[in-house]
Length: 447
Ligand code: ASP
Image (tube, rainbow, N blue to C red; front, side, top):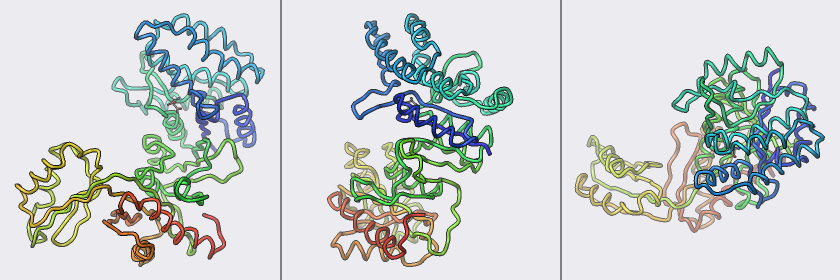
């Protein structure tokens, strides 16, 4: 069994966290391919090593002395290594790095967060260190050369049988360090999983997976045990983000499941994300609820519109002209709406409306501002009829006015628009009615 275990910044923030990682790795002999982020925050106001290194770059760029800052970073690594009894010469290596700071490229400087963290981890776990610069190969345009990367990772496996790999960076064939976007350690993990055709990609972080609702809105929400990639996309888009999109694609294409696990609570089941989740008869109806505030809907009415060609597309092209991206297009027989983020149209909405008036000549055009969208997501909804009716009923009973309704094309989510002011309450009502009640009636936690 091949498992890739990727540990995020908070999982490697201190010696104490390293000890937890060791326990996790040693608990399962299949955990031989380890990817780490740079040491992250130990407490809420702490600094991530990556942020400190970015600050170093800014100092260098403006010719400001950064000796003290470098000394702070060095101390973080030295403290971890000392407490763990790691003999790899952290201070010496760091001083070589720091004394040449002006000669390094900014990307090289930032990548050292992962590099030092992985070196310490490798010795502590007794697993060989492999430099990402030698295996993750970038094209000059910043995309990954999957063919070369795959060949090099496979070679490394043959040679070492196991490795600790720093995440977040790689190099071009001529050795120039390149970074992924922020949080890109997840991408490294996914690429390695893909190249080795892993059975599972474990992503160890500081939450026990996805929650079915925002805990700031719903008290003690159920955690999601299984979710499909499509469901996750819907929830992430609406604000419940745990993993980056870019991190998902390599594993999704190869049908490799991702398991989100909590380094601080390794026995929690976490969330498994995969392409499909075979349901059972009594499986929950709603997987999760997420939402965002501050949208605007422009409603356009035109009699007999359903018999005309191109009315909606003309309206959309007006938004496109103003560079506004469209979130939803709820349509009726002789009307349609265009939902956009309020921030995106704050300076242009009146020009857009004028253009629609001129080019489409609608019978009526109206705007609803301060709109919140709530996405109710569940792969099982399409199998059971009447869910949307029940959602609207529950909101109606609670006196919440529904301003808009739309459904995703795969029928895995129902999106309701309510006033910003009703946002929290609407989520609570839907949660209580469909998730909490279901848990009470079946006596089951989430599956
Ligand atoms: N260390 C990098 C960051 O803070 C990458 C990562 O943590 O995945 O963005």
